[in-house]
Length: 408
Ligand SMILES: Cc1ncc(COP(=O)(O)O)c(C=O)c1O
Image 1: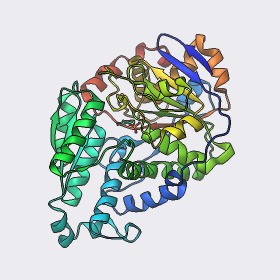
Image 2: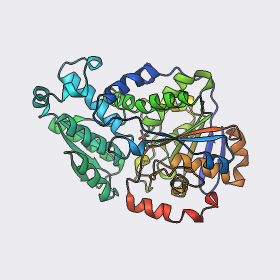
Image 3: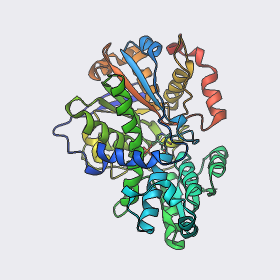
């Protein structure tokens, strides 16, 4: 195990002995099943895979690609992929329909909508997942209750109300305690808990949520193949690590021995995956307390049990970073310099790119760059997992982009 530390970030390299098999639930074939469902939703379109050649040149790598999830449905983030697929699977089960033979339109038929009117979902969210759940509940004619941790900005609660019927409240609890609260409410009222993380005994629904995210991975694989490009590196931001673990599992399954080097990026104040990797005992560990970071989507204290083993066994690097690193990523995406398109990326969406920019431009991190093989042949893949979900903060973070050395 090696670690490089600056005031902006910490990079942990872990040794991989014999990586475990990717669980069947998160292989490329499941990604195709999830994508088949999403394709039956009105408004489905593959999100763009954007090439940023001028940024690649400035960073001294061969290529930079970003999957732009700010364009996903009308939701400004990837998260609706998970909520909608899980809700679809739950409702198929309630109506005794075979998901392989059922489209979104079948569920929306008046006779099915009538049966689903009384179904109520509940979840905890830091924003984007709740938006997906509210939106999907509206599609299928169900109800939803959404709880948010303390410190959540009202703009994020309002964004959830705007896309669907969910009743939204901000609690005075941490994220992890709000999850427990949502669980208790599901037990008290008979609402269905649709949570984007798993724990012992609660695995089926989170598995479907992660499978929903795999639509992204399936699209990326197809888009890169069409360009005859193989990524050498992927930077994936993590809250509980469900998205990162699912996508990494799918990429590792698809590319096998030629899998990209993977770096998992989290906020320093909510770095549960980093802490778990650092502990080195193979088990997931929680970070206690209420964390303060502008990366709201990554502000989670307990790794997802389903995907933690994939991150543990298939990610080589774990990065824990300050908010300034996310701002750097937002600025790099927003720069649109020398012919690169502008990508609108929010705090959590930009953390992966921010970490890469920091590592590639900080002289004191030369040894880390070498260990990571971030050299002129590197082809970097990022997922911009959200757009400007907090528009005021987005403006604040990108307004002074010309001040940063990266954009000099
Ligand atoms: C924009 C964004 N990116 C990344 C993530 C991380 O996903 P996960 O919690 O599955 O690690 C989230 C989670 O809410 C998010 O909203």
